[in-house]
Image (cartoon, rainbow, N blue to C red; front, side, top):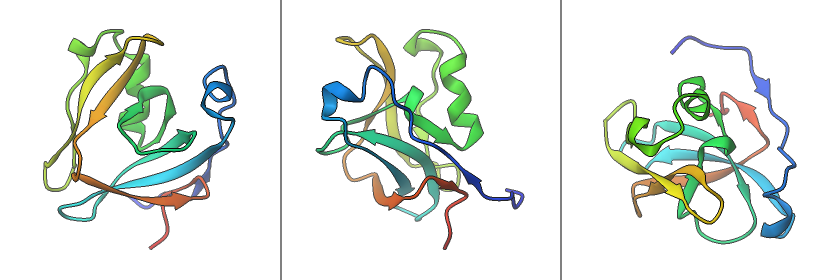
Length: 122
């Protein structure tokens, strides 16, 4: 992966933020097996990460563009660590909101708060 100049992202404020308490923050998601950075994600509301919505993935670009491709979960690949290939999430449609997401595999990832800068420092 080539070194990029750091990019500062801004939180999305749309119709999905308010129903989840209006509390949004960035998280860096890492593979629990090898520690590789998997995604920069905007988490809305409190609670565990059961799924990550495609429209809340900011980086890397190969994941952030998935929301623009096909509108069905059949068109989505599994979410895997790009370094060790560990399965981290499987495609799904969150029916109440008809949103594409990855259902996260418990224990396959770790998270760390972020200020929205990509790539993450450290």
